[in-house]
Length: 269
Length: 206
Image 1 (cartoon, rainbow over the protein chains, first blue to last red):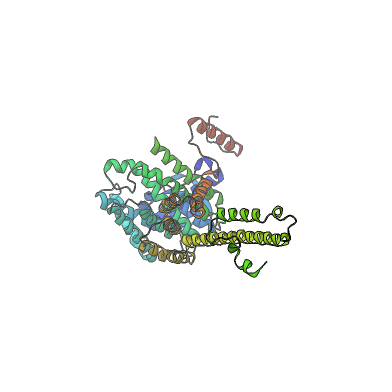
Image 2: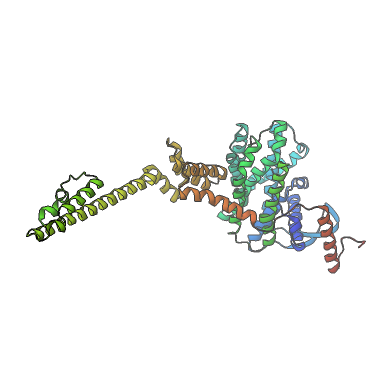
């Protein structure tokens, strides 16, 4: 489900690439500090992007300074310092990873992540206390998705809507920004669908649930998927972003588009 | 011209009100021929004949005018009727009002409870789905509405707008191609040159 939202790195300027990396490292470091080092393996670029967006609209923005990290002990590298956006993203990343692992274990009785699950579970308990309202909403949407998947729902809009609402909650950090909410919804909807397309063949082979029945269904949904992406951009254009704009531009206009094209082409071949 | 003739031009021509246009023209020509000036040359009744022709002409003009007006009225009321047909379904009016006021779920419930599924029903379902973020449903609804009533501009525009907006996003920004190994090496070399300019180096041997 994760890892789809990313920058198209080939088109990033080197200075922007450094900032991107700095946020990623900063997030990793925060996650280790707040939730335990083991949870750092659950990190994906999606949350780095979210941190870049949320920090980009904050008043002050975090400080990026050279530092060391445990995983790369020899070389000093630019790392984004502690800030509310990174803290929030670190917690949310761990919570979602945990729920995803739990889902996998429940669905197939197995997950590669079983050995590390207790660490995530421990952190998740802490997060549920810190962000009780947010976590409750996320869990509600996840439960709804599970229900659709169990019922074998073949209307892609229904589970995609739930995942969209989940991402809307994640993006809208303080539940006060309608633009972030709309952007999150559209990104979430896109992630769910692109993930379903990406996994289609694998799911068919293994007899697992996929909201699409045939390749024809996928083709028929592409027009509205492109519309979906245009809505991400439409919301983003209304976002009052103060920094990191070049990076987020890249994610919205190149990263997402390129990912979509790659996955569609792979499906066709 | 006598008062009777103004009141009843048909009787001047010796016709009923429901006479066809051909009958009117035929009677008119017949009467004009009958009272033609040539028939009353040097006749003391010539003035009376002229008066009669005048009456006939007035009656004919009056009938033409009346019929044109009748036709226009009929057309107007027909088009009025048509207009009321397309958007005077009071339930749709209510649905549209609900959508306009932002009561999307209310509109959705109203639409779900309807049995009749015409083009407007599909269109309004499309609008509601779009507002809820159910883009795939919205797209299908608009498509069906357009298929059912291909001449309706409102439906067609809603359908075309989704494609237009999606197309604009696809076109925005440079079109990304997958990197082949040549461009990859080139980019690395360029990156190396840039780094060297700045005092760094990624490919130490060159």
